[in-house]
Amino acid sequence: MAESSEQVTSGEGGGYPLEATQETTSEVTSGVRSLRELIERVTGKGFNALQVQEDAGIAEVIPFPFLAIVNQYEMKMALLLALINPAMGGVLLIGPRGTGKTTAVRGLLDLLPLVPRSLCYYGCLPEDIESMGIDAVCPDCARKYAEGKPLAVMDRARLVELPLNARLEDVIGGIDERAALHHRLRLQRGILAQADRNVLYVDEVNLLNDDIVNALLDAAAQGSYTVRRGPVSATYRSRFILIGSMNPEEGHLRPQIQDRFGLRVIVKGLDNDEERLEAYRRVKSYLANPRLAASQFRLETEMAREEIQIARQLLPKVNLPDQVAKVGLRWIKELGIDSLRAEITLFEAARAYAAADSREVVEVSDLKQVAPMALRLRKSIFMSDYLNRQAEEQAQLQAIVNRDA
Ligand SMILES: [Zn+2]
Image (cartoon, rainbow, N blue to C red):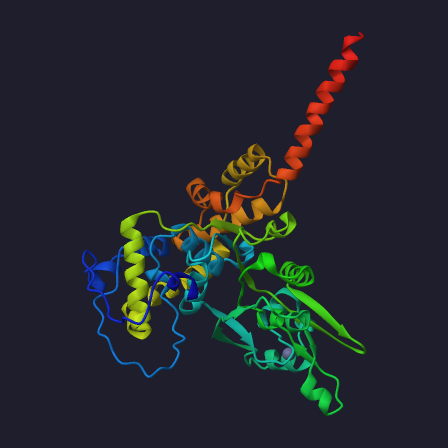
């Protein structure tokens, strides 16, 4: 929440009666057919006048409602598409401080989908059996599966944050010190393993140590990783939705790291006065009473969460026709992008977009919607400069040689 509250001086309390935003909830949500439509509609809705109450001085952990964020359409869409399709490769939010990046990510808390959570210590899931056969799970789970007992329960995904000061041991896991006190050697799950099936948020990803970034990206790419400590080793699953944010003023992100993120969103401050004022009012209302502020967006938030769940279920059926894919490949070629991750993200994001719109076939218009987010900052400036210089040199060389024909 800190980001968007920076500009506000608190202490005065008091909510604002908001004009021009007096639509009732039923007007806002009636006839919504897709997630996209819901976001578009709800963007114009504000908080109603708030009653000021004496608080008990207890810090609230209620996030600022995601849907109450003013404008920032592309950021909101990118984050929701990431929840719908983890195969898209996550999201990188790029922008200065105070533009609501962290607020938006924490606001996802109320929108997180249901995911299967293993009931077994080893993390066995029914899908392991479906994809790799009965030997893919532990003997206990194989027996349970044969008896028709559940191996997993559906549980809300969690938002796991990787703090900037985390040590490599915290990130990948290390010796369980409490067990070591009792002369037992046991490994403790690190943040990457805790993030399995969840959303992992890394604020200021450009300021992380290289060894942590490497561990993070390898785990994200492979979906699992192995930790070895002396005689003990363990392999953990790490299939998470990676969301990173960075402020380019504070440090640069190596191009090969940047390439590992799926969608890239440039988050700018609002430049319209009306919108800035509205954002100020909403933050002020929220700070005065977070619980009440959240309750005013509860219905839309629940609808959005359901839409995300429905889109996730539809996603496996959404297909990308060849003639649509070829249009995307042509754009990538014309842009001179080498990385294969460009089309993976472009196509997977377009599938998520179609699913969010309740369609089973991807259209060129879906590609158009997601292309800026999927394809920007993909081109290697170093490589194109290098090749241009090489071409110039080649031309010069030819010219010199040809003079003596
Ligand atoms: Zn098991």
